[in-house]
Amino acid sequence: MKKQGIIAGAVLAVLVIAIAVAYYMFSAKPQEGEKSIKVDIVHVDGTAKNLEFSTDAEYLLDALKEQVEVEHDGAWVKAVDGYAAVEANQEWWGYTVNGNFGQTGMDQAVVTSGDVFEVICNVGYDDYAG
Image 1 (tube, rainbow, N blue to C red):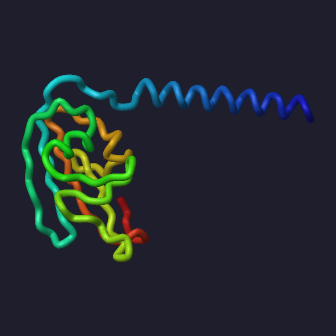
Image 2: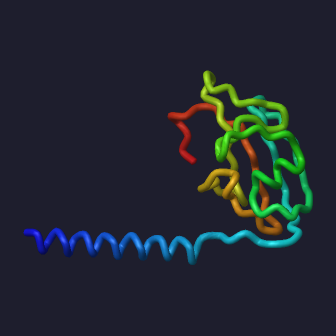
């Protein structure tokens, strides 16, 4: 029994290491230098601000902060372009990149030249399908 536990632990350790290496190798890497991007900011009332600009920022949050006021607590974005999401109304800021729902916080969303971002004030936690 003890030998099986040691083998299972070793197999688990190897799997964890393999997953970490694969993530590091295949995850998006920041692109240095100037990049041209589009960012559409959609407020909870449906109004939008459309931005098209060049940036040296490597991540969406930094690029966004170059253009509009952004309040955040680490990765959690609280307000964009003067509108603070109202937690009591289940409002929250999220984003898409090239039509796909963001898989990281805006602080880790890699910016690549030609990207189109939509920064959206969403409403509702339970029904969001991503």
